[in-house]
Image 1 (cartoon, rainbow, N blue to C red):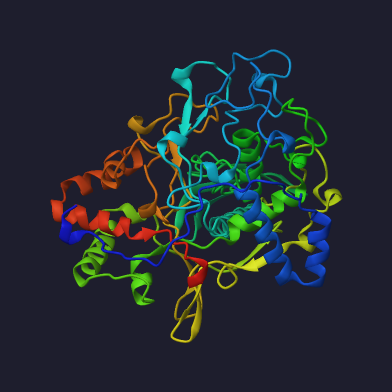
Image 2: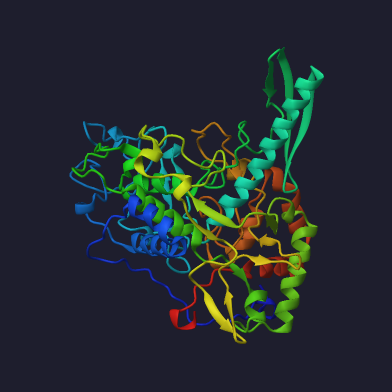
Length: 500
């Protein structure tokens, strides 16, 4: 990028906590959280948030069950070890292991640009879901950031509810008309193909849904915003899977009282621990952009750089990038609750087969907070008023605006980006549109960290994004630099406590 187009941003001091906390940690009691919600819900949110903060930074030891019986007398492995298949070893773990364990704390991998951030390519997770033992078929996944994960979950909940309402309206029409009804699936302006309702019996009415025209989402119409291929609907599901695979910490809700990783420790993470981790990641401050910081006096943004940023935003949309990396969506309900009461976004049964309510997890006593007001971090005083820099902003009509830069759809990204294997059957080249929130503060980029620059990431796009890539490549150097400047302006800022 030419020097005059670089974004000259000078931020207040940042907290870059990349070390882990040693010592002891107290398990979180879900029953205590429930009692707290009944007595003081706002204070309980902060209690859960703080507990989640401690859990992400804590350096777990064998005493707490970190790691697993990998085999060969070791607890950790950077690569999958399907060859270690003696009783209790890597390949015999329950649930089936995909990778690792490879770390003793969350922030050992989530470190760019600060704690809870993304990871360098050296921290890629290497997966062998089908236990092939063949390195040529291993999958690599770059570490994503953990900031403000409540935003994508709530957006996905609202979009799925829209899609399901369209499906049910088609059912009602098919029953009323006695025939076949085709309905376009559109949620927050994003197209997901069509669904066909066909009446199969009249009294009582029964309907078959033909999902062959559904695009970019599973046939159940539940958008799963987490995972590079959009595999997991909730932060909770994402968290317990990461705890098992990456840390070797097995949540009770995943394995019950069993020692599924054969390390001699059970009850490694409580239901309350997972709730606290979910609340923490949901409530972390959102990524921002340099214009916001300049307007608040937190960054210097020379006029030339402001012009480059704005020009880049316009070009980004003009060449088609914004059709998938949708710059903003309206979030109708800013209340985040753990657990959610939205269909498809809570556990009917825990993975270990137990009833969540029997273990204390119930929407009636959910820990909740407002995504547009309640984030504990990045609260600053500006001109005598408190600004929650980590919260969603509202437009002139009072609507909450989420700038998450994704359409929450899966797309075929072309052969060059394809995985070497397709264990999920979604398509080796199919990936969920990656959010660009905070993209200027992370890197390397793409699902396996192959791109060492944002331009390289753009030029690696293919398949459904081939036209946008070609349009970018056809621009002159200045225009391309403006788009990169726009992307570099989407940043993660964690303000020092002194500046909160």
